Length: 207
Ligand SMILES: [Fe+2]
Image (cartoon, rainbow, N blue to C red):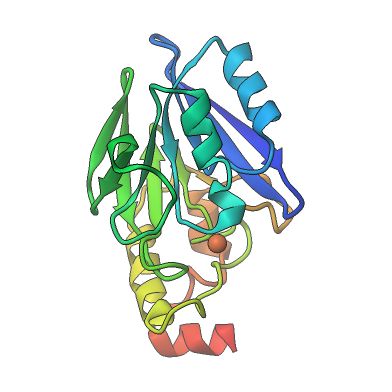
């Protein structure tokens, strides 16, 4: 399994290319901003793009979904059923918690992690977890003021995330702190949001 982190756009976004080495089937997590860069990466890995894995619908993560669906007729946009993303029905995979996708010989698990948005998804593939704006490695979690139940949902999602195995590599949707990636163990010990155990503690952190 190949995972490549791709810095894109003006907001420190990170798009990730995942490639199954045996079949060359590929996915992009949060395809945004720099179409030429992403297409060049896919080509340089001699890969076939199957999935656009959207962690959530904010434009800075998914603004290339429509154009990449045009450029790659085999590809489908993947997102939670509660998220609004501009993709035709026949080119979409609408997820619920626990759904799995095959990418060549790789297995990808979709975990519903709302809080930043109602349909936030964390994707787990091999030893990697792709969180979008749910957690920022070495830092905190994403904003929770986009909808009414954001804080409550985020606390529940953080509880699920704390159950993930320590060895996973943590890949976030922006590089806001010192680290490009960390491990789940590091996050459990250092991430300010993950360390909160109650809604009260969390609300205090978020001020
Ligand atoms: Fe976001």
